[in-house]
Image 1: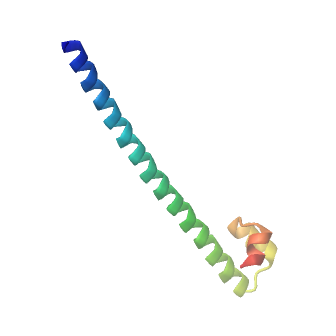
Image 2: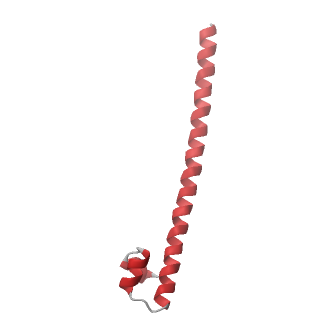
Length: 74
């Protein structure tokens, strides 16, 4: 009987731990996604500024790492 209670406590603890890990992973994933989106937006803004300064498409591609298609869509 005592073993059954201990087993149930361990099981509940494991479930709680699993839920907490899931929530933490979701938060980390959301932060990473936001950070990557912010970096992409910064690159696009820089590309626009470089184009306005008169740099060639090739120079903007080299400076930002963006694709030709992405730069042309700006």
